[in-house]
Image 1 (cartoon, rainbow, N blue to C red):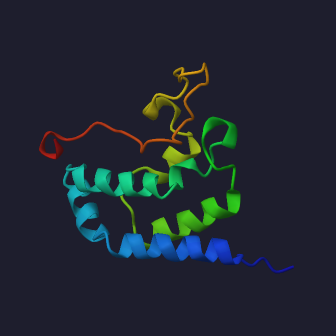
Image 2: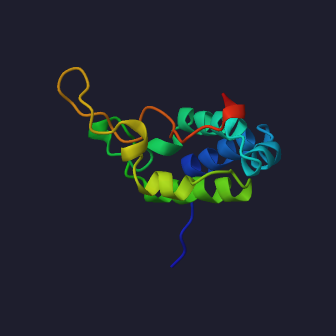
Amino acid sequence: MRFLLDDEQREFARSLDGMLAASDTPSAVRAWAAGDHGPGGALWDRLAEAGVFALTVPGEYGGVGPLPVEVAVAFTELGRHVVPGPVVEAVAAGQGPLSGAGRRRPGGRRKAPGAVSSPRWPRSPRAG
């Protein structure tokens, strides 16, 4: 049995690759290692805009998932570009404790974990 990505999944991989290649991830990694999470946080914001953190969030909560193949595609590209931070943990946890999941939205719906915003962590004083 062979598993192949469809055209949309390959395009998702290409778009993440292009975004990450243009994002100077080596500098973000060096800054992260030095305790400055600012550049890594900006990268995570771009990943959120690309929908990476919504891949595991069900559609009824504002996400696009669960999409396990797309998660694997995203993790492949994030690993290839050595994106700093606890990416696997953030996606696996659904951003619940980090993004205010469970808070009521207008209309009584709960906010989707990670569907709208990128994860937050304690920023170093240098990061602002």
